[in-house]
Structure formats: C-alpha cells, structure tokens
Amino acid sequence: MRILHTMIRVGHLQNSIEFYSKILGMTLLRQQEYPEGRFTLAFLGYGDEKNNTVIELTYNWDTDSYEQGTGFGHLAIEVDDVYRATEKIREQGGDIIRDAGPMNAGSTIIAFVKDPDGYEIELIGARK
Image 1 (cartoon, rainbow, N blue to C red):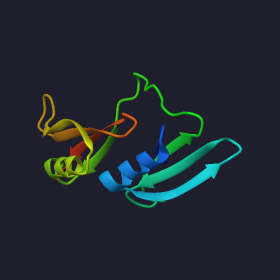
Image 2: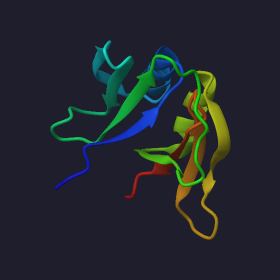
Image 3: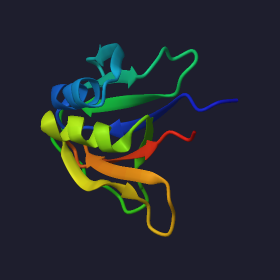
C-alpha cells in the first residue's frame, strides 16, 4: 500500500496550477474536465504518479471558494535549503506566512507558505 495523492478543492484552477508549478516547482501531470459532473481534476507533483505521491486539485465549476475546516493542517514538502526556497518563493510573489527558521522546541528548519486558496504548505529541510 502507498499514499497516491492528497486532494484539495480550489476556487480558481489556473491560479492554483500556476502556484504549484511555477512557485513550488511541481509538474502538471494530467488534467481532465468532467462536464457532466461540472468539475475539473488536475494532478501535480515532483515525479510520475506511479512512483510518487501527488496533489489532486479539484475545481468544481460552480464554486469560487471554500471554507477550510479546522481539521486540515497543511501539506509538507521537503526542500534542500529552506532559507533559499523561501526567498525564491517570495521573489516569485508567494505568500510566506512563517519565515525559515528552527521549529518550535526543535532544531529542524521549517517555513510556511500559503497557496492561492489559503492552504498552508510547510517547507521542511532535507534530513542529512
């Protein structure tokens, strides 16, 4: 068994695709419209779906925004250098909500960024 993907609902599909691809460096792996259901699915990731966990963006055509529940925490992405990744994201217009630095009560370097729909993404330094 393995985790295939994490699905999040988005209000503006193209804005989200641009954020995850241009700012976070993922590749749009596939996208398909379902006219009868009035929704579009887009899958993005850092590698093919056969060997990697990806993100599924679900865009329901009649919904512009969602209220995020209190149960969802964040997505986590490992990066080689959190400080450098944070600066690159900031330069590209990404919304940094916690600058790079040691986590509370620990030494792991982390940062947080928000996507266009307000979902939080944690950047975690690669373990060496």
